[in-house]
Length: 141
Image (tube, rainbow, N blue to C red; front, side, top):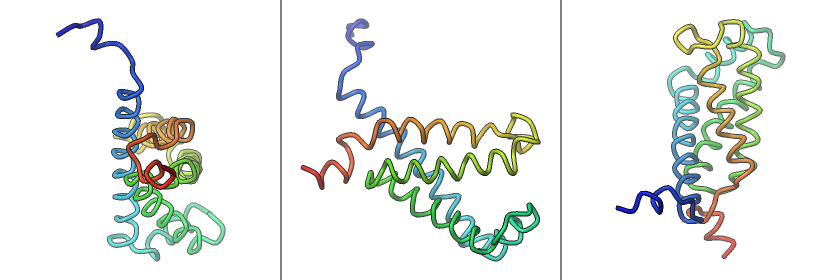
């Protein structure tokens, strides 16, 4: 194996790398939305949001649940990637500042670690778009 060529960046490697990030992050968001919808229920999420003092907690619970569920699915498929990434970034910034920041950094203390990573991935996807391994690319071709 030629190590120098292995380290060389190519458009194909870039597209593959972004695709892996997009799909993995999409799965994480989809599963969180799934958990909110089918395990906690919109009412349970709304109750939690209400305890945080979020206005229109029930409505916001439904919005966040479906942004995570459908936004995650959109990332997995690579359709509407930039819009999904933007909505999910807003979701993570809100979670970071309303829930996690007072607990410090580490996820073991319910800190910002996970939402910080997911927010960073959303920024990367917002900047990159979905790349050629996506439904966006298949539709626009």
